[in-house]
Image (tube, rainbow, N blue to C red; front, side):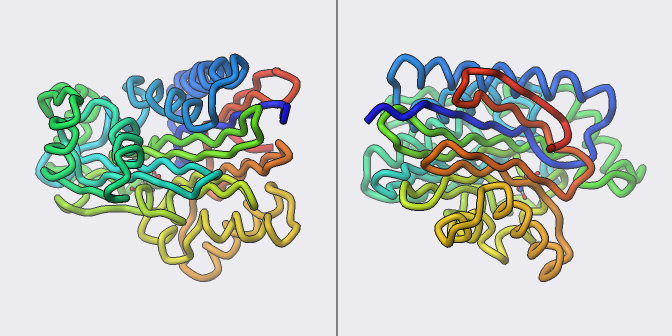
Length: 302
Ligand code: ASP
């Protein structure tokens, strides 16, 4: 098969402050280009989404990996998932604190194949025993988030004033030359979350889903709402029924609002290379390298 590869990435859907628009778009653009390079040289969709998400996890602009928001007790706790659309194999991790690249630990969980989903210290011990270096949790904390957490704790209403502040969850979907789809999502979750809280992001069919027979999708936004409608599983099902990825993404976000009152964003890619980008938040950072190799990035879909 010689499918023309496509990659779409996102860097979170929320009310992104004006001064953060450029770094968000640039981070997404760089991640999409890195993933595209993997695909162009014959790499798999799985490798491409992992590469793109690793870059976004390293970029402190985003709420994933280093730069993650802090929970109620001032600590980083991260969730991630990766899924292979060819085999439907997946790996997921949640509430981890000492791993630089949660998406790579999710990939390791998938590759080892004993389990699909590991959480907390058990997930970290699994990483260590499989040769993945653990980092000090402090290495993942950036000054911006420390300041925001202090303000939140002092009750300054910083978060109340802004929709989903801050939530630069990241994700990627890719289609490789072999016609295989993959999806990945990684997040620090919601600021001020209860320790141990797990959002939609690492849950299969909620934060991400990939099936060569339908589509690949990654979600961001209000996790408590997104998981109630199985957002990414539902959007892939709509593509399988014949909707375009764009129509399906818009339809699922409308359903999210109707059934839960929640809002968020979705990226969706089908096996023909058609993609959809939609959000019901004021902004969503995204980038795509489409079949023609052209790179586009934005802060609003459309
Ligand atoms: N969905 C993520 C969560 O609830 C946050 C986000 O995407 O902004 O953990």
